[in-house]
Image (cartoon, rainbow, N blue to C red; front, side, top):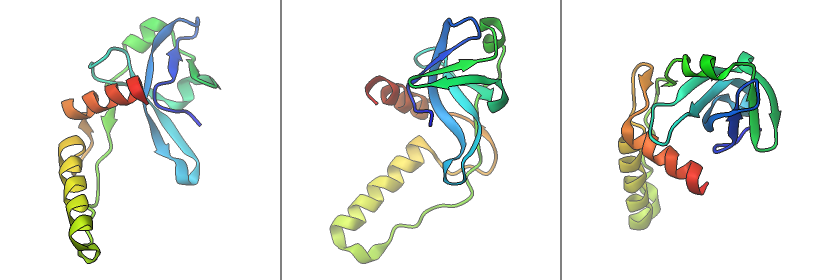
Length: 133
């Protein structure tokens, strides 16, 4: 299983970025592709799964050259289809926790009706997750 922060290398072995996010559904073992960060706060690029040549612990090797990676399109987050309603049965502590999670969700990953670019707050959060994750 690929993890955030792993190195991403081109076909020649040169580093082209780091894994920002894995696209797919791990609960049913579906791997669609990767969002890779080619710079600290730059927009992530999308690598389709068929362009992943090899996966080893800590490294994902692509079947693409460095130039081809530079031409990849921006990773677009999928639309979200549901909002999670906080459960009010847990008392004041649970209610405050739910409110905090709701605010965090609105700032970092707001509900979207269609595919969209990753917002700046999500990019910053992913940067720190790669750095300290």
